[in-house]
Amino acid sequence: MTYIAKKCGICFQPPSIILIYKEDNKDKIRQRIMPIRNFSKFSDCSRAAEQLKNNPRHKAYLEGVSLRQLKKFYGLLKGHLGGQSLAESLEQIRQEETIDPEEDMNKLDDKELAKRKSIMDELFEKNRKKKDDPDFIYNVEVEFPQDEQLESCGWDVESGEEI
Image (cartoon, rainbow, N blue to C red; front, side, top):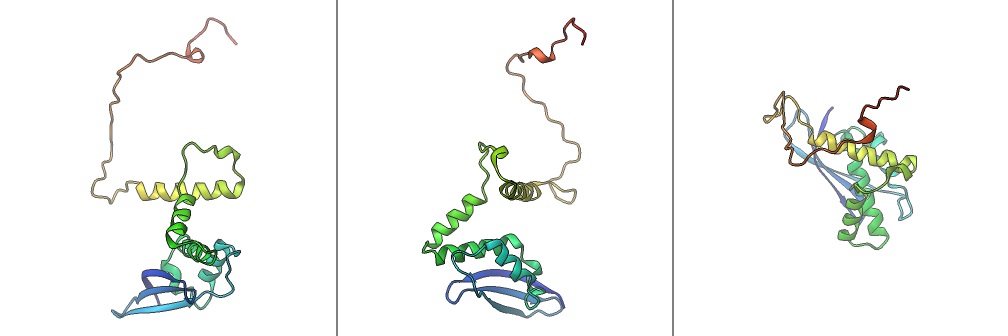
């Protein structure tokens, strides 16, 4: 049986993920409450989200919910358990998912770099124009203004010396 996720949210007391879903062949909207057990302010949000998504009891229901969204919910719960307000937790999650263009990615470890790349990939896919989009144009040609004289660089000037 296939389930279509309509809404997903988190409840802090008692800690649980709430899913509003619809069965594929029926028009009835249902609610599923998935309790969060053994989670503390020191727990790993990614691991907990993966465990919930792969749990045999909830797997079929959570197919329409992204792992990133579940990680956000666990991050909100972790902030709540750590004493942060909802606004502070949301701001912290927003900062983690925003890429600073001035940041030197060469200095990041592999795990952080993979996280930044996945954020960039998701943003690219969200902004990408597809053939089915109504404002898709196949062959776009753009003329860039030449306000200033272009400077030539030393490396692109042909020299008389042969290497």
